[in-house]
Length: 465
Image 1 (cartoon, rainbow, N blue to C red):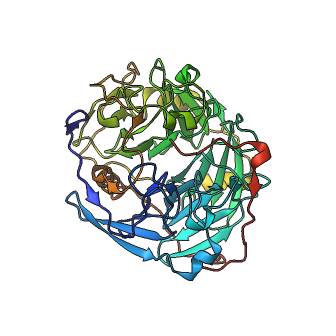
Image 2 (cartoon, helix red, strand yellow; image 1 turned 45 degrees about the vertical axis):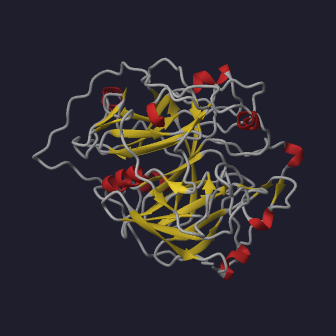
Image 3 (cartoon, one colour; image 1 turned 120 degrees about the horizontal axis):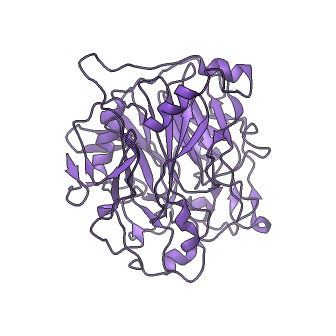
């Protein structure tokens, strides 16, 4: 066990040439216990290397003892990069042996080749990285929206349904209006084997549209899958962001939203969430959405002093229990590796007829009838859930508007997170399939996007990498 105020971080220095990026993604290959990074993100907001690094793909292999090693898998001089570009703000997730990147933005801080770009460029399309072949594939994103563009939302891999799992996309913005966010009443579902998109209507307590939130998901002992949404903001800083300090739960296959009842106090965005240790979520880092600034845009956060607000989570860490729906300061290492639904969700399924869910199509419904669940061993028994009562904990203050440890930069300070993800995923079932017939081939923005400034870079759908 550990407490957030005293836990010690291990640091692993990146080797020379490894990209130093903010807003970078970590893709996990469960079969080989490897993390990939380098394809998404932008030049680091910290350190002494402000120019964007060349595009590349690097892998990190944990050693099981709090350390590990980096190596380059696709070097910057590989010819495949002539038809690829790094993007920021993209929807991205990994699972089932692949990683997906949807939409995003090209700007002067994504790659050396884009440093002279004067306006933000929207990048349409869906790209898949195959972890076995180390190759990239183009897929259509027109099922997501007409132009296949968007970002600053979240993508999540659900291993429990479909022949090879399903990718869900939600929230964010299509950049058509700097003040407009995509609602959560519609959830996009992508199935990789058929390269097919579905748009499913959600019910319940629908979250307000937002960006730069985080998602964490887990399968329950009742053969449902819950996705927890935490935080985010509507694109403006200040006191108006306080109501976004909230947690919502999307339960599958019902596609029904629940709001966890607690009083919002400390909004944040640009943070990360990961389901670890069975029923626990660890929230790491982020940006104070209620920073003391003069205007309501992200640029003002960087220009303001970092000590304008205090992080209520010691060292930027907080634990949320998915069964009791309570915040905590202590991570419990001995918790069972399974997750039991909260009383809130149990009561919904108990009181709702089994056929109440209305899928967008019979094909989508059939996908959710293909399931992959593991039950706890007879020697273990879940603890009974209790009603939600607590708000986020207040801990020893840390004077910084930027709540550190939210990105992978020059030093990988979150080895413990990698260990948690590794520990948890090793015990989760992830379906795999090799039958893929495809053409192979927050402090994030320097300024807000405006409709008159947008461009769209066409993707090369025939590229083979």
